[in-house]
Length: 449
Ligand SMILES: *[C@@H]1O[C@H](CO)[C@@H](O)[C@H](O)[C@H]1NC(C)=O
Ligand SMILES: *[C@@H]1O[C@H](CO)[C@@H](O)[C@H](O)[C@H]1NC(C)=O
Image (tube, rainbow, N blue to C red; front, side, top):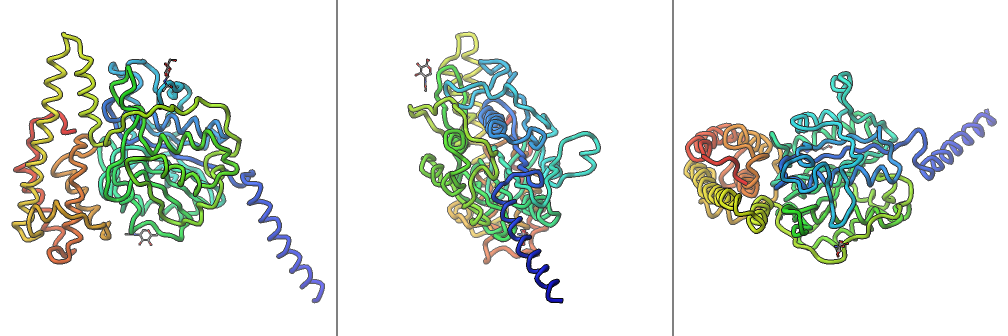
């Protein structure tokens, strides 16, 4: 009896010792890094930088020893070979940088890059795997790194076809937790208003730590927007901060917290945020981004470059195109630019009219009261349904990205205790649909960007 007790004590003790060793020597065979890298959108004007960010991140992970078979990469991939790309088949993520498109292995491209597929990838969907498509195969001891770069609004991030709402993302992450798909998970999110994807929704006790490029109520900024020879921006401030930070420091020593602090210091135009289980920030970066040390990589550019609101990327692109337009294309480019400006003016008016209809029906006090407030989003569930209704009945915001900046108005309406009750949602969406059919649906623009 006594000896078996001693034995038990030894087992417990050694069990603990060996567990410690396992953690310290991470990763070993039973514990690996898996990653999902996603750029949601399409088009050189607004998504050159996002697709370059994602391919760059792929190299960052590979260079630090993450196994290629453990990385799932999704980009629309319409940019590298677009006729507007001055360097066909190449993507640059910083001035005088290396071509990040070379060796960037894409698992999903074109219309396969959508929220449904992204969520299936995260959930390790068996059907998709059966079709030979790559999905997350991580287990309970693995560390998962997710990086998304694209457009955002309050409570949603956008793919070309449709939105992924905070509610959908929360359900997906919760599923991953319940199904033991990770030991620890970090999520780096580059998008406008990206804090709103996690604020008041991401649980603090499911071993997930998230960093966002912007707080819940501000746009993110693109950077390297005036590099000679490139009419578009090469990167975004947050991405152009965290990747070089990983590349130029010893990530086997630097913690996620320190990386976050470096990023906060470097990002000048927005306010990166942290969410979820912040105790994970004490771990070293190599627990998520690869275990080998950084190599000699191109220096970060020292000059300062133009930064622009991510919401103005298309405008910026066409203005730059106009500056360098040949006589032959000048009129065409000028027309394109004026049609973008006209589309914006149209939408500014149209959205006021749509909100006006909702206010007339009693869901808000006045258009100005809705547009001049910013309530933080708590009812992610109702809002998520509204976003989907808006996309199906009003306009595709993945394509018409100018509309994203107004989505906060709908969050305000849902959060207004005086005017909105959850029971009203169905009726309100009906009124929204009617208003959109009058004021938005039949617009005459190619895309409102
Ligand atoms: C988000 O997920 C967590 C569990 O991970 C859950 O407790 C919480 O209720 C969810 N939030 C919403 C708004 O559904
Ligand atoms: C890029 O390279 C060119 C030519 O080598 C040099 O003149 C320029 O200063 C470099 N720009 C940056 C940002 O390093």
